[in-house]
Image (cartoon, rainbow, N blue to C red; front, side, top):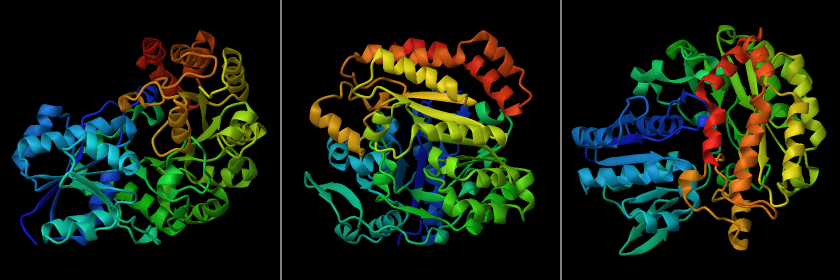
Length: 477
């Protein structure tokens, strides 16, 4: 192995989702991967550059790569950031064409053929779960072994695209190391989620589980993780919460899990957290299904006792017909019950809604707006139905010619990508703006919210007002 080899993980310059106001998240995916590479390949030098936190534009990134002289550059991103990842690779090749470029993440896992054809600057795509594959790939490259033996990668050789066999998933997630926050320690004070917790509250991301056994037609996650749900043990999760809090001062901790699965983890997490001092110093945020919340009010109450302040849930729509079309597996009544339970336990409720289903009309979206107000969540986030590669909806939309915008930069759920049977894409965009105007445009309600006794509500609505979110949506029309 070449002992002087240097691996550079890059969080490229990109635009954050303006819907959530001003925030700067730590590059959690890169931190998870870097930690595993660091443990398994101790002779390799590892560096992470976070262009957001380090305030580097593309020219700044080019200079950074030139000054650090890595042998490999790695990056990862969602569909809306696919071009940023490709440009990172392009810049690395501009600095030194011998730099090996590697990308991963959900988008590239589902579009390896398309991505390698469109972006020749990408040398290798790591498909699916990254840790084992990435270490195997790095070791194989450094030892000049046979690349075809590495499972779970796609690459181009002699103008032919090769996809090696998929790698099995890791069975024991507890075996993974803590994310490599020490590699971005100088930036810890810059990571924040102003809308949710205030500008000066230390913000970190926590992974407790991977995947989901539900198969919602608009979601990539279950497909990416093999339609399985795997979790770390409650003790391991709480050990990590305690570590992030005590070592780096993490206070606002966002579970990145797509499915909290209260029936399995609720009680064990409560039992572990109630024994730790950190429970009094953290604000936990997680995502949960509304039917899961509705069925477990006792667990919601217990988790509130040990630091849960904020829960996001996908309500999606008031139409049971569309819920069935989405394969969501929930009832509209579940949403009312879930909101009531969160309100009773003083937990900040965030409801997510989707407009732009094929059968959506002006009237159906108006009914959704009324429904969202009737539910009285603390915050509503409205999105457009977006055909992400890797979703079953994408396959249907592509087959039927519904996709009108193929610019991945617009796949941010704020831009309308498709028409409906009766609405043009522009009309869907207008309806999205009306959703936000209805929920956030009332002067009387906003005054009440800004003056709320609940600190989270005051922080959120003052920030939303300052970020001119309504005006930004209007400009998209």
